[in-house]
Image 1 (cartoon, one colour):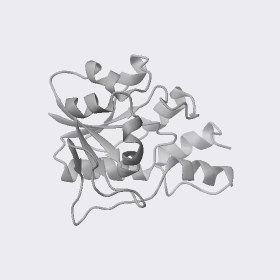
Image 2 (cartoon, rainbow, N blue to C red; image 1 turned 135 degrees about the vertical axis):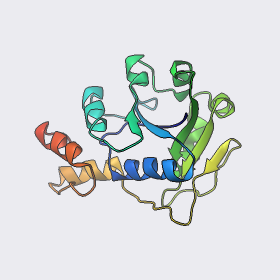
Image 3 (cartoon, rainbow, N blue to C red; image 1 turned 180 degrees about the vertical axis):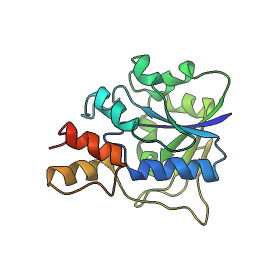
Image 4 (cartoon, rainbow, N blue to C red; image 1 turned 135 degrees about the horizontal axis):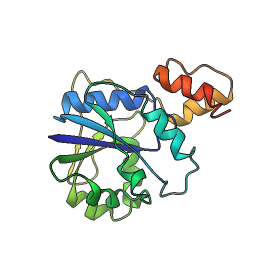
Length: 184
Protein backbone atom coordinates (compact mmCIF):
# COMPACT_ATOMS: atom_id res chain seq x y z
CA UNK A 1 0.00 0.00 0.00
CA UNK A 2 1.25 3.49 -0.85
CA UNK A 3 0.88 5.91 2.08
CA UNK A 4 1.11 9.70 1.89
CA UNK A 5 2.38 11.24 5.13
CA UNK A 6 1.04 14.70 5.90
CA UNK A 7 2.87 16.02 8.92
CA UNK A 8 2.15 19.20 10.81
CA UNK A 9 1.18 20.88 14.03
CA UNK A 10 -2.55 20.68 13.16
CA UNK A 11 -3.15 23.57 15.53
CA UNK A 12 -5.99 23.35 14.50
CA UNK A 13 -6.54 21.01 11.55
CA UNK A 14 -8.69 22.68 8.88
CA UNK A 15 -10.28 22.30 5.47
CA UNK A 16 -6.98 23.15 3.76
CA UNK A 17 -5.43 20.02 5.28
CA UNK A 18 -8.40 17.96 4.12
CA UNK A 19 -8.18 19.44 0.60
CA UNK A 20 -4.51 18.50 0.42
CA UNK A 21 -5.13 14.96 1.71
CA UNK A 22 -8.07 14.29 -0.62
CA UNK A 23 -6.24 15.59 -3.67
CA UNK A 24 -3.10 13.66 -2.78
CA UNK A 25 -5.35 10.57 -2.90
CA UNK A 26 -6.89 11.73 -6.18
CA UNK A 27 -3.79 12.86 -8.07
CA UNK A 28 -0.62 11.45 -6.45
CA UNK A 29 -1.51 7.77 -6.41
CA UNK A 30 -1.72 7.23 -2.65
CA UNK A 31 -3.97 4.54 -1.22
CA UNK A 32 -4.16 6.32 2.13
CA UNK A 33 -3.03 9.62 3.63
CA UNK A 34 -1.90 9.63 7.24
CA UNK A 35 -2.04 12.87 9.21
CA UNK A 36 1.05 12.83 11.44
CA UNK A 37 0.75 15.42 14.22
CA UNK A 38 4.14 16.59 15.38
CA UNK A 39 5.11 15.86 18.94
CA UNK A 40 7.33 18.93 19.21
CA UNK A 41 8.17 21.71 16.78
CA UNK A 42 11.76 21.71 15.59
CA UNK A 43 11.85 25.50 15.23
CA UNK A 44 10.46 26.05 18.76
CA UNK A 45 7.21 27.44 17.36
CA UNK A 46 4.64 27.71 20.17
CA UNK A 47 1.87 25.13 19.82
CA UNK A 48 -1.14 23.95 21.76
CA UNK A 49 -0.55 20.88 23.91
CA UNK A 50 -0.18 17.68 21.94
CA UNK A 51 -3.29 16.10 23.49
CA UNK A 52 -5.50 18.89 22.10
CA UNK A 53 -3.90 18.84 18.66
CA UNK A 54 -4.21 15.05 18.45
CA UNK A 55 -7.83 15.08 19.63
CA UNK A 56 -8.73 17.68 16.99
CA UNK A 57 -6.90 15.75 14.26
CA UNK A 58 -8.85 12.63 15.19
CA UNK A 59 -12.05 14.58 14.43
CA UNK A 60 -11.17 14.30 10.73
CA UNK A 61 -13.04 11.28 9.46
CA UNK A 62 -12.88 10.76 5.72
CA UNK A 63 -12.34 7.59 3.69
CA UNK A 64 -8.68 6.62 3.27
CA UNK A 65 -7.50 9.34 5.68
CA UNK A 66 -6.10 8.21 9.02
CA UNK A 67 -4.18 9.67 11.96
CA UNK A 68 -0.75 8.30 12.85
CA UNK A 69 0.58 8.81 16.36
CA UNK A 70 4.05 7.45 15.57
CA UNK A 71 5.78 10.75 16.26
CA UNK A 72 3.89 11.32 19.51
CA UNK A 73 4.12 7.70 20.75
CA UNK A 74 7.88 7.66 20.18
CA UNK A 75 8.39 11.12 21.72
CA UNK A 76 10.24 12.31 18.62
CA UNK A 77 11.83 15.76 18.43
CA UNK A 78 9.95 16.93 15.34
CA UNK A 79 12.82 16.16 12.97
CA UNK A 80 11.13 14.34 10.08
CA UNK A 81 14.18 12.13 9.52
CA UNK A 82 13.55 10.50 12.94
CA UNK A 83 10.12 9.31 11.82
CA UNK A 84 11.50 7.11 9.03
CA UNK A 85 12.79 4.33 11.28
CA UNK A 86 9.38 4.08 13.01
CA UNK A 87 7.29 3.62 9.86
CA UNK A 88 5.84 0.12 9.34
CA UNK A 89 8.02 -1.62 6.75
CA UNK A 90 5.13 -3.21 4.81
CA UNK A 91 4.14 0.05 3.11
CA UNK A 92 5.64 2.45 0.58
CA UNK A 93 5.67 6.10 1.71
CA UNK A 94 5.80 9.58 0.29
CA UNK A 95 5.80 12.80 2.28
CA UNK A 96 3.30 15.56 1.42
CA UNK A 97 4.23 19.19 2.03
CA UNK A 98 2.79 22.53 1.02
CA UNK A 99 4.84 24.74 -1.28
CA UNK A 100 5.04 27.20 1.65
CA UNK A 101 7.65 24.77 3.06
CA UNK A 102 9.96 25.05 0.04
CA UNK A 103 11.76 28.31 0.91
CA UNK A 104 12.84 26.90 4.30
CA UNK A 105 13.18 23.22 3.40
CA UNK A 106 16.97 23.53 3.59
CA UNK A 107 16.55 24.22 7.33
CA UNK A 108 14.96 20.82 7.98
CA UNK A 109 17.32 18.53 9.90
CA UNK A 110 19.28 16.25 7.57
CA UNK A 111 17.17 17.43 4.64
CA UNK A 112 19.51 15.98 2.01
CA UNK A 113 19.36 12.54 3.60
CA UNK A 114 15.60 12.89 3.93
CA UNK A 115 15.25 13.55 0.19
CA UNK A 116 17.32 10.43 -0.56
CA UNK A 117 15.13 8.34 1.76
CA UNK A 118 11.67 9.42 0.67
CA UNK A 119 9.96 11.12 -2.24
CA UNK A 120 8.22 14.43 -1.47
CA UNK A 121 4.97 15.51 -3.04
CA UNK A 122 4.47 19.27 -3.01
CA UNK A 123 1.00 20.77 -2.89
CA UNK A 124 0.77 24.35 -4.27
CA UNK A 125 -0.04 27.19 -1.85
CA UNK A 126 -0.86 30.72 -2.97
CA UNK A 127 2.07 33.11 -2.81
CA UNK A 128 4.75 30.40 -2.72
CA UNK A 129 6.92 28.68 -5.35
CA UNK A 130 4.97 26.39 -7.64
CA UNK A 131 7.95 24.34 -8.75
CA UNK A 132 9.85 21.86 -6.57
CA UNK A 133 13.30 23.13 -5.67
CA UNK A 134 15.00 19.75 -5.27
CA UNK A 135 15.34 16.37 -6.88
CA UNK A 136 13.00 13.74 -5.37
CA UNK A 137 10.16 16.26 -5.21
CA UNK A 138 7.08 16.26 -7.39
CA UNK A 139 4.46 19.00 -7.57
CA UNK A 140 0.93 17.66 -7.15
CA UNK A 141 -0.84 19.20 -10.10
CA UNK A 142 -3.94 18.60 -12.15
CA UNK A 143 -6.30 20.84 -14.05
CA UNK A 144 -8.97 20.11 -11.42
CA UNK A 145 -6.74 20.78 -8.41
CA UNK A 146 -8.35 23.04 -5.80
CA UNK A 147 -5.98 25.11 -3.67
CA UNK A 148 -6.68 27.37 -0.72
CA UNK A 149 -4.84 29.81 1.48
CA UNK A 150 -6.54 28.53 4.62
CA UNK A 151 -4.09 28.27 7.51
CA UNK A 152 -4.11 27.40 11.19
CA UNK A 153 -2.66 30.84 11.93
CA UNK A 154 -5.61 32.56 10.23
CA UNK A 155 -8.09 30.33 12.06
CA UNK A 156 -6.52 31.06 15.46
CA UNK A 157 -6.62 34.79 14.63
CA UNK A 158 -10.31 34.59 13.69
CA UNK A 159 -11.09 32.92 17.01
CA UNK A 160 -9.20 35.61 18.94
CA UNK A 161 -11.32 38.21 17.11
CA UNK A 162 -14.50 36.36 18.10
CA UNK A 163 -15.26 35.33 14.50
CA UNK A 164 -16.74 32.00 13.47
CA UNK A 165 -14.47 29.31 12.08
CA UNK A 166 -17.16 26.71 11.48
CA UNK A 167 -16.82 26.98 7.69
CA UNK A 168 -13.06 26.43 7.88
CA UNK A 169 -12.74 23.40 10.17
CA UNK A 170 -14.65 20.11 10.44
CA UNK A 171 -17.63 20.21 12.82
CA UNK A 172 -15.87 18.05 15.41
CA UNK A 173 -12.87 20.38 15.43
CA UNK A 174 -15.09 23.46 15.84
CA UNK A 175 -16.91 21.75 18.71
CA UNK A 176 -13.61 20.73 20.37
CA UNK A 177 -12.22 24.26 20.10
CA UNK A 178 -15.38 25.72 21.63
CA UNK A 179 -15.66 23.12 24.43
CA UNK A 180 -12.01 23.48 25.41
CA UNK A 181 -11.91 27.24 24.92
CA UNK A 182 -8.85 27.07 22.68
CA UNK A 183 -7.23 30.08 21.02
CA UNK A 184 -9.17 32.76 22.93
